Amino acid sequence: MTAIIEIKGLTKQYFQGRVIKAVDGLNLIVQEGDIFGFVGPNGAGKTSTIRIMCTLLEATHGDILVAGHSVHREPIAVRKAIGYMPDFFGVYNDMLVWEYLDFFGACYEIPPANRKGLINDLLELVDLSHRREDRVESLSRGMKQRLSLARTLIHDPQVLVLDEPASGLDPRARVEIRQLLVELARMGKTIFFSTHILADVAEICTKVGIIEGGRLVASGSPEQLQQVILPHRQIHLEFVSSSDKDDALENHYDRSIEGFSAWLKAYPGVMNIEVLHNGANSDKAKSEGAARPDSLPAYTRIRLVVRFTGDDFSVSRLLQTLASQAGQYNLALIQFHEDSRDIEEIFMQATKGLVT
Picture (tube, rainbow, N blue to C red):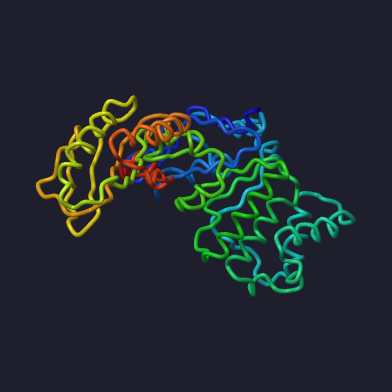
């Protein structure tokens, strides 16, 4: 794939009684066609990076190339290649919706004869055709965001750069914006958007960059970040005892669970085992060898939590092996599921709570 955004050693300093590095030696590559989520807490340097990318702010050091053009040396070419949507919609509330788009079409020197059809198409794309004759000030926050997104598309840019596009939106409006971004990506646009709403990243992003204190702390696909930052998978197993005699349960535990746990502990990729028992007694036993609990309630189901390293194929092989091996210890596997490791957990592991 072709790199369409290249951030090279980007640094931005401010002086506020002292020198503050909002962006500190940032290097990042975004491939053509990506939906790239630029994630970080408030004050991490997201907006400064985006404003430099959009030629609205000068870098202290470094450069950004957008579609091969330098923001420092070729700002006009960069502006033609990008559509920028700021985090705040603030322009000409007394305009009609179609007039708003027409105004920006004129700014991009689109001939009047071409603007009418283009405006109709854009309003249909963002589902605002029914509001074309309404004043901008009458639109809801979500509708204004959709109109602003239509405005970024007026000159058919290669790259959309969106600063917190879902900020302040209600849940339904956030979903609508996400759906629009996915549709635009299908149309061939590269999308670079900043956010601190991790659910948006998890839903639509093909690549993610996590920034903190002006520095990139992690970058890659959500799957790659999970493998690097959260290499241990947590798998839940549940077995049913093959014995239904209460007086035999303790002996059954000794024979089955201790032996099975010892086998499982030795299985390649298993890091740790935690044994949980269903029933009135919820005591846990934690140890590498799954030590026997102090008290044993009357139960027929036994649950284990296994920390496991390995890819999806390794998990599949583990499941197949467990199903056959459990029978040798008079156990029957009835449940097998893995905890989902979401982008929020990845973010918390990658960051330390730093703010420049």
